[in-house]
Structure formats: structure tokens, C-alpha cells
Length: 297
Image (cartoon, rainbow, N blue to C red; front, side, top):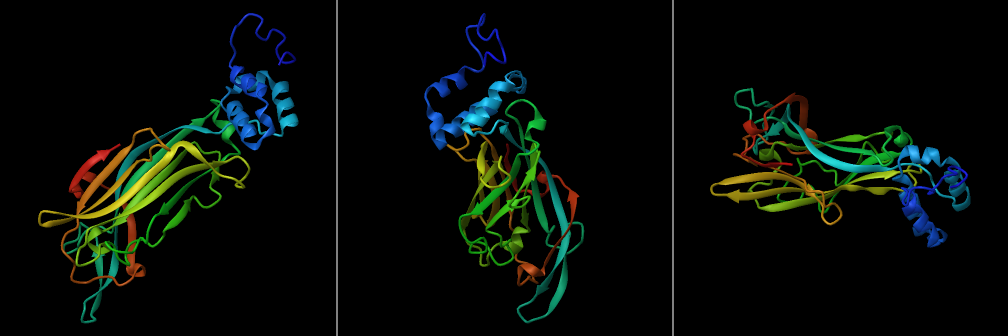
């Protein structure tokens, strides 16, 4: 360090490098876990500090075979906006007749829009304070439902994907935010009939990779729990969607929850998910469509 700064600690009693020096003195760098801890300490050093101690960083990189760089930090989830989709579906009566049914709340006789979209955004910063330091860091969203998405209280019109990544398994590089859409098709069409109470749960993780996708690590405060629920309230059946922070993995409080009245069973019903055409997306007012908005964050 004295090679980079001949006056290192000549005057100051403390330095932002103190945590790094302390960890190096433990000789933990001999283990994989120890190297990971050192890499994390370095990742949170300010960019200008790493630039100042460039020879020190180069030495540690060469001798310990560790990465010198930044990682995503300070992740924050927000609810951004509500949208609706208007499309149609091919419906059938029990007697076999079929027709195209509009899913457009602005069309008389339609059971409603095709989908409700709850658009969220996760934003994060660079651990060293410089966004360009994340230029080669990959980020992605990973969602895993804990049971069959089309099992009761839902049906075969519900989205079938049980596990997925966005924007794909390899994610994207150089990002500082990710759009997080949570959509649901019209509850009257995706809920099992006769109506039945039940819950579908999922785990959501935002992850990053510093080695081009070979290994993935969960972001700090990037874990959430998702819930789709059907319940009876008086004479009505209600569908709800809820998203919360996943404690203790993520203790940064977040709570989004909205309820929709499921409504009557349409005369013509789709038979498979393929009969459903979501259509196009439009701006909407969540209070116009929801039975109750419990929380938006």
C-alpha cells in the first residue's frame, strides 16, 4: 500500500482500507470462502480508492487470484404502474358451439380485459459508486413457483410456466435496474369452477454473475415472495396477488397487494391456454379495476 501512497496512515488513524487489511491478517484468503469475503470487501471500496491503490489491487489480484471489481448493491423494489391488456379468446359452450369472445372492458358483453399488469422495478447501484463498473456484470430475475400453476384453485388457462428466468438464463450486462411485470389473466377465466379456495406461491430472486454466467449470486435485498390466492368473501369469490420482501433473506420491507372480484362464469369458456389471445397493452387505473388495493409498496 505504501507503493501507492507513501503517506499511508502517516496522519490519519483510520482508512477505508482497514476492513481489507484486517481480513488479510486473518489469512482467510487460503480458502474459497475467504477469497469471496475479500472480493466483497474490495467490491465495496470506492472506485477512486481502488484507482489510488492500483498497485495494491493488482498485487492482490495476482497473488490471491481474486476479482477486483464491483457488484450490484442497494437494491430497491418499487411499484411503477398498472396496465391492462385487451384481446380475445376462442370460447366454447358445453354443447360444442364456439365463438371468438372479446376481452375488452370497453366492449359491451365482454367479461373484462384479458390481463391486469402490475409493473414493478428493481433498481440497484454499483457497490463502488460508479455505474460503469457493472459493465461486465450479468443480472437476471429468477422465479420458481412451488406447485403446479394450473392446479386448483386455478385451471389450464393459467400461465403454465413454473420456473423461468428474465431476460433469459444468461441475463443482461451493465444494468442498474430491471422491469418486473406481474400479470394475471382475467380471474373469471383462470380460476377453477366451481370456485375453490387455495393459494399458489412462488419465490423470486434477483441474481448477478461476475464470471459471465458460470456462477450466480443473489443480490442483497433482491429476494421476494409471490402469492396468488382465491378466497370467498361473503357471496363473492376474490382473486388476489401479493408480493412481499422475503425475510430474513431480504429485510427491506416491501408489500404490494391487490384484490379483484372474480365475477360470474362466462357462457363461453376457453379450453386451453392456447385459446387465449392477450392482445395489446393499455394504460389503466388500478382503482377502476381492483376490488381493493391493499398496499402498493
